[in-house]
Image (tube, rainbow, N blue to C red; front, side, top):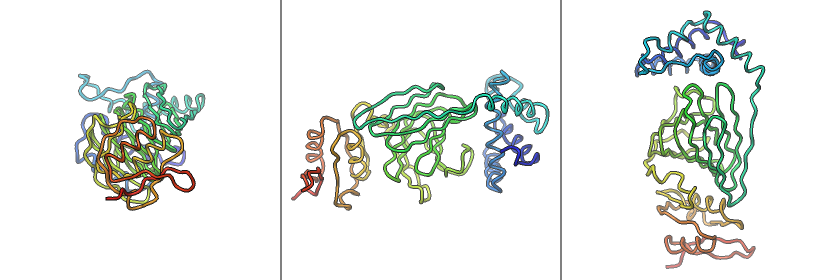
Length: 322
C-alpha cells in the first residue's frame, strides 16, 4: 500500500502521528487531525500505515516508544517525527523485512450451543466465548484483529498502546488499546458494553482510534446496525457486563428477542417468539440460568409471557392471558 502513497502524504501522516503521540496534542490538534483524515482517503491510508509501521518498528529496532509522563525529556516525537528522514526510513525497512519473513496468520475459534470457552491469545488478551459463537483472530506485528461472525464474546485486552485491538462486527469496527468489553452479535444487530476502560465504534473503513465515531467508556453501551447512524450511548451497570460468563443474564430495557437469542446459545431445541410486537417488548431483569425448562418457567413468572409447544414441536413464547 505504501508504494501507492506519495512521499508528501506519508510525511504529513508521520508528523501527525508524532504530534499525537508526543504528549503535546490538545483537543484542537485532535480536531484538526480529524479534518485532515476526512479530506481524502489517502490521508487515512497513510496515517494507518505509519501507525502500524511505527508499532512494528518499535519492536524490531528494540526502541520502546516513550509515553507522556514517563519522566523522559526525549519523547516519542523525536524518534518518529523525522518525516521522510533516516529514522522513518529505518523503521520502514525493518518493518517490511519482518512482515516479509512473518506473514500474518489467522486462528479460527468456535463453540457449540451451551459451551463457554476461555482463550488466552499470544498478546495476553483473554477471550470468553459464549455458546454458538464463531470468530477469527489475526495477530501481526502492528495490529490485532478479531472478526466476530456470530455469537457473543467478552474481551479483556492485553495492553499494547501501539498495537490496537480491533473487533469487526456488524459492518463496523470497535477499537481499543487496553480494556474489558462485551460484544454481542445477533443477526445484523450488535450490542457493545464496556466494563473497564474505553472503546471507539466507527465505520469498518475507519480503522484509527482518532477518527469519527462514538466513544464508549466504563458503564456505557451502544446497540447498532450496519445501515444506521450510530446513536447515543446508554448507561449500564459496569459490574453486570458479561455476567453471562457465570450463568447470569442481566438486561436493562432491551428487546425480549435479545434474551431469547441468548437462551438459544445455551440450550438445544431453540425458543421462538412468533409475535413480533412481543419480541420487541423492552425488558429489565436479571436471570440465573438453569436447565431450559426451569429457566423458561422463571421467565413466565417474571414477564407477561407463557410457553407453549407449537404443532411442529418447537417451544414458543406467547402473551400470557390476563
